[in-house]
Image 1 (tube, rainbow, N blue to C red):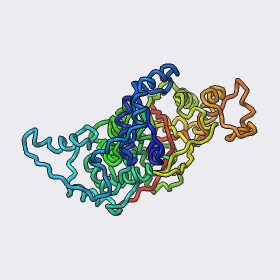
Image 2 (spheres, rainbow, N blue to C red):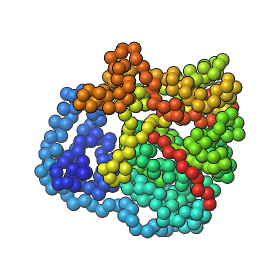
Image 3 (tube, one colour):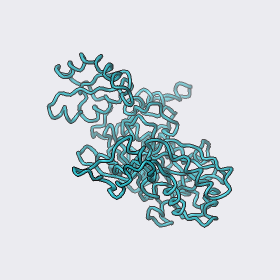
Image 4 (cartoon, one colour):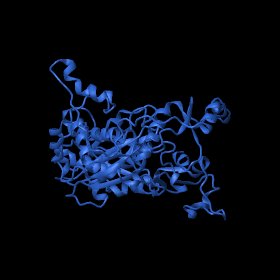
Length: 460
């Protein structure tokens, strides 16, 4: 819509009322704050045509005004970062309850927080955080959307202090943002989606102990033992809010949100896992440190107390796979693609990746039966299947002029077979097996949404 307006063609957007602030935030970020729009009461997805027509008809006068009247001059852009240096503010504090909370009130008034009290990012504290890396303060790791904020090392350090990170944890956060910057992460869609999705940070290698990340019991829970996990995950969310301008109800129109959006960071329990760690699956050496980021929704518990065989355990995992529209055979229509920054270029990527968080004892059940991690992934790939007719019912496979499937033509002969089925995910590697936590009969399953990225950790 913004591109159409910039080309000189009048355009009016139609947005659900709950997306109005998100729309304004996005067009502000794209440099076209006065792009016209009208609101309707409800999202159109799944609604009947007559209901949609009625909602839009009620806004016809507003649509005509948007197409025929010049917009009012936009006001000041507020706190948008237009490239100037980092600002410093002075906040007066004292020992009274009001005085002690002055910094948090200051941040809340500017919508610079996740709603939880923060550590004041004083210049001295930020300088100390920057000692956790050799990277230069003004190095730009990525442009964060929807607000197109420049994620410099210094600005990331400010948010790391606010979240409670220590300098030895800072390299993990920087690596997570390096991963998020990869096109296949499709981070723009993650930021502005109404879906309840969030980045999950997975950490491997020697940095785990150096950063103090908990990888045993309650590794994703509250408590002092999880200080590093909590701070790193929260710091990434604060960066997405403050640098990416993805603020609740504005840039972030998520329909309800989830506690997972405050931040998720876990490390693999490499000590108790019977398999090689996940970063080795991604091509790293065991003695290297790496961070993997995958966008997910969920999680869902997998209760495995009744299992008597490795097949029982795998069947319990497989029972989680059939969440409609979450990788359920969609690969047959071709890969997804992500827009690269503020360009017309798109990058195809394989996705989604479904993280399966196994307790060590669940992994041992499989390993003691002689199954490698790759064997388990192959079993899931073979046995997690969906009816082909249901995949094609929701959206047909694209075809060329001769009627031949553009993707996977070798499977087109199954098109009219009512009993045909295909794997839910395209490849075994998309079942991301990650061993962590305490030894118990539970596992967790996350539904992945986009691609995945694994990057090395550059330690100080």
